[in-house]
Amino acid sequence: MTKQVDSEVTAILLAAGESRRMGEFKQLLPFKGKSFVECCVDTLLASHVSRIIVVTGHREADVRAALEARPVTTAYNTDYKSGMASSIKRGVEALPPDARAILIALVDQPQIAIETVNHIIETYETHRPLIVVPTCRGRDGHPVLLDSSLKQEVLDMDPGQGLRQVVRSHLDRTIRTEVGNEDVLVDFDFPDEYRSRKD
Image (cartoon, rainbow, N blue to C red):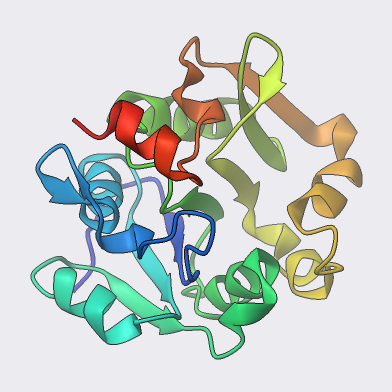
């Protein structure tokens, strides 16, 4: 089952990591009445994205169980211990052929607002750049949107550089859009960060 809207933007939610810096399994930590992964998926479901691919890895059965009632596709990354780049590549491999753009979302950003996601998508729909990067006070954040014509570049990117390599290659066709919300700069990696915002 997939959600049908006009944008043909597929979201790839990266939820494969081991949460070593947090010390607990981040994907299932509570955040405002839900788990991280549920918050992220529900935001994407309420946004203009057409499909959602959740890339799983560590404790993948638990993540799938948390999302079983939601219309998402999961893609298991067998190489999740090697880092985020491998999960991005796994998500791109699972893209439907008609995906026009790819929104790369992070499971450690459960606070991202629906309006922020929609603003990024609307920027892409209006201007058709290759890349859209949300910013706050001039600093780059996430989620990042890529035109699907960049799929092969993503699959070929150096794992040590990740998406930075792709963005640097297309600075002339990248739009940095100010969202006025510092949530795009925040990800919950450490216990203190989580405790300060979880309620």
